[in-house]
Length: 204
Image 1 (cartoon, helix red, strand yellow):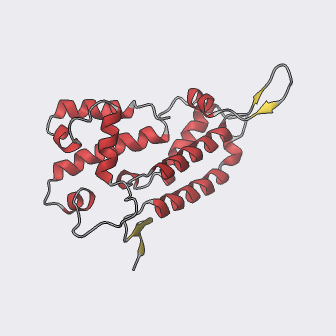
Image 2: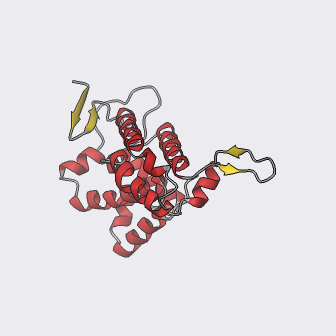
């Protein structure tokens, strides 16, 4: 069996997150259409619309995301999805001179959306998950699955990024790349500082 769906999560024999992310985005899009009238309503405040987005749509999209190993293509798909959701909340911007309307640019959406972006949520919670994994120790199954290195040779094509590779790349972005996330976890205060830095990471 090459693919199995367990607890609403698609598991593949290659540990590929692509199919799982596609399934999550489709479910999130279906949720968006079910509440589209609310998100586009002029009667609701933007704060309430954000709450609907975070508590209904994002929860569906990000179910089990702490174990995802993301390639650049999947990161872009998630960013495109969130920008599409935000454009459904924010009305198009009008030009005072010409009277024409246009969609908001990505930078404008980021400035208007005051909550953590989908990437900041993924990176911070994945780092928190890494702390729990490091705490379990090497003998536990979850550690061997997410961190362990299987025997045998890897395919000749470009390998997919591993879960712990994503964590180490996040550390490099916030200036903690000299040590691995497992080593950093040994110091509680330093680990909390790392998690907060990843949470505040600005992802373009």
